[in-house]
Length: 473
Image (cartoon, rainbow, N blue to C red; front, side, top):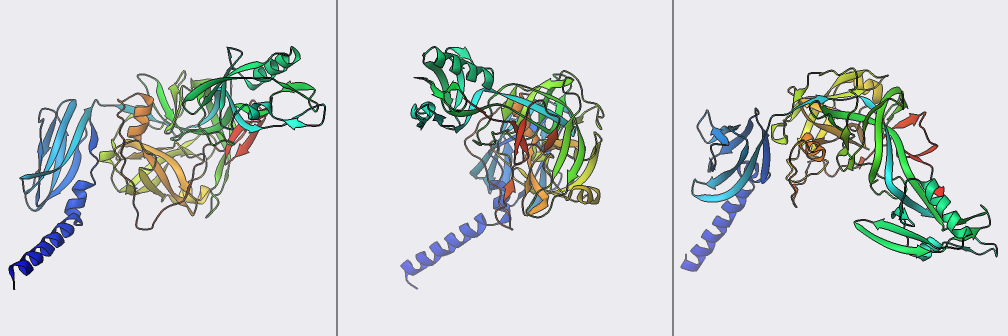
């Protein structure tokens, strides 16, 4: 065999060995670790390090590595020593650095898990444009001054004539008064992260006998959701596990003010394949406010409690487990399926997606409790925000149900909810590792709230979430 042939053969053999190594479980176990991990003081993160990997820590005053066994494949524990930061380095054969993972050791935290059904009344910042409504003029010609001026569906009117907008009725009254005085209205409009000003002349509407600019707007939403947790020292709470969006524009509602109150479940619509079920709920006492709403975020709503909800199962609180502590296997969720009684139901964690940046579908879970399957068919609208516990610690919340299989759904890690609430420091990152499953891509339905009666406004329903009826102006 010539020298060139031998080199080619060795090259192909080397390439084959590299590819085989990269596809090996030993390599993937290390490479799939997120570049950044959080460990809460008092908990231990466990890893499996196999030959030919070695692991070292650059700050043993923050994190200590313990390996009770030796061999080609051995369990390794990361034990927090002090709060702070450390970097774990993985080397090939102890020589070649291949992977680093930053470790943040956070202070201990105890939360009181929720599961309570809560009524939610949310007022937007300004009024949301949900549609164009042509103005019928005296000459029979219809037009929309707002559309002609460039106002689009999804825009938000923040102020009118220099006065902050408080309600849709206020905007309609100012527009009509300005039109009768033959004056233009000056609007401050928000579109995404951009705000701009424009001025337009109201037109007289022959049908309504008032001056309008040709828009449908909405200023509030109401519904019933699930409380996830609260922190008893600061009274900070988190609920829902995902963002509230407007039913017409599908845009997030910028929260200006809002409140949560106690609610009760009066019925269940059973879930089935292709048709997720829902809870039917009622506000108990709208005047008895549990807390305010300060933030509407991709991981739920947050604010401060002014009164503690009753009937806590874990009134003394439970520890928090960061995502590195979550394991495949048994867990439980807390939720209400009848009245106000919180119950514990068995579930199984089937997939775990360790994430570097905030992303909602960190867990795939399956309802295994025969009681819940009989009463609801699995995960139904209104369970979003139900806390998930494993090994006596809160690990996340239910967020979505699979359309094709209501016994299964997604959950988010409690890490991201704690960051949104401000209970642990926020860390921004541009990357996130995706969840892969052997069964392929899942369809899911994002159900914000469930059916509710006795709300303070006339409301309309879309996808289980209720909004005040839109008003023309």
